[in-house]
Image 1 (tube, rainbow over the protein chains, first blue to last red):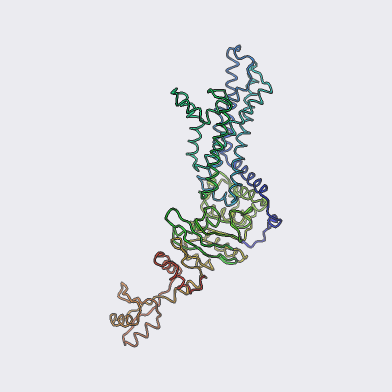
Image 2: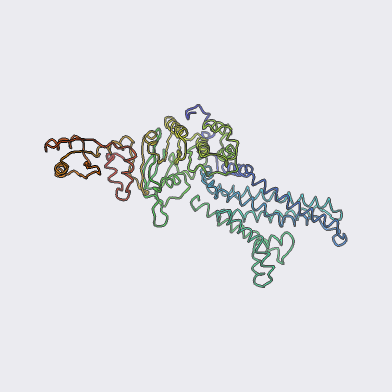
Length: 268
Length: 312
């Protein structure tokens, strides 16, 4: 085995340097390949499928076997919404690991050697996991809705309600996965970022609401998880403007901090 | 070619790399030496844009690495062979690298063959031995057929076969006209592998010279060992000539910075018997320990003297 073996020299380098768009497309392709080639991604998707569709189907069976009257004519979209309320966490973990795993393994070193333009890497590494998590969540919510509709004859599935529901599911997942990715870049630790996402998105909203002290309830209404819950099932009390501000503000802040961390700090 | 200019990295008040300037020329293997913590890896990481210099700069083929669109076609590196996702296969690891640089997939199989990874390429990397990880890391470095290669301690933990393979590989790469920077603490290997040495200690440049010059320079200032029944008389005569003399544990004398001829002549003039007279041979390892043993005391100037002033 010798380095002087005749090897085909890739010709593309000679034909001029690719533009930023082409470099970004390659980086995104590499991100998608990274996600596809580890089992964790598929386990997360399986967990999300089981949770989202499972909860949807359970809710439908419950509905079908229970007293029909009060819920007659209800849109089946509640199945996907309840499913995503809990099942979103498998998808947030998927997005979060896409960033933090490399800080644990040291893989960020090779990655930055292959894509040293950090702005390009950041854009690809935010876009791909967010799109994957959001698309998977919407498809699974649709699956849960259709399954519920098929099981419980009383339920309806009007196209308008379905589009509205899936749009809200997409907003919640895009917001949550962007928050997870941003925190991953900022904290550079699987455990730290997981804890932060779970606290902000699930535990604190429920805990602070549940204790019932006034200032805790006020505080809970500032958390991204509260906006996600409101967007999915209409609780707790808040306006659409408030929810939108939280769903946009938190991930934007997290991405700004995470982007700073990737662009300005040593590779890690 | 790699150009390092005034490269400095400070962590708080501590300088990990302190005003390093050197070139790594194509067509030869440049050994990058220094004790643990000397700043070798930090320097390589700054060359590759992974760590941000406090001041100074490093260029590969005249450009900063961090701005390259297709970096794997310019410079390939193996820094930490273990820095991979344990659940991904070696082949997929290489496919990701190829995808990110627009390199055809045929190159993936070519480099897998070149490094002899064979059927292991399809297995998940968590099952790889250190030797297999090193081979995969080298395959990644070679993927884009780059002109510049950086290997950080590639022989670490390898068996003799692996060490010989890497030695042959880097020699071939340099013979191809490529720029090869190789860090290692296996000094005997460096003696057989490198053409040129860049030696650093505590982040500072100690020597930058062809390997032969480093060795020759060290021998000119060598030590002579002499055994005589008239120890005190001979030591006195040598001291009067301004030579540094100290007794060895076995009753012999060690005379620094001179040759066997000089010591023999002094003994003849004095008329004392000499039972043994020998120049101590320095291996690269001893030279290296000498040079780096007390980096603070040595700094750059004595080393420049040692390597014949022409080092830079």
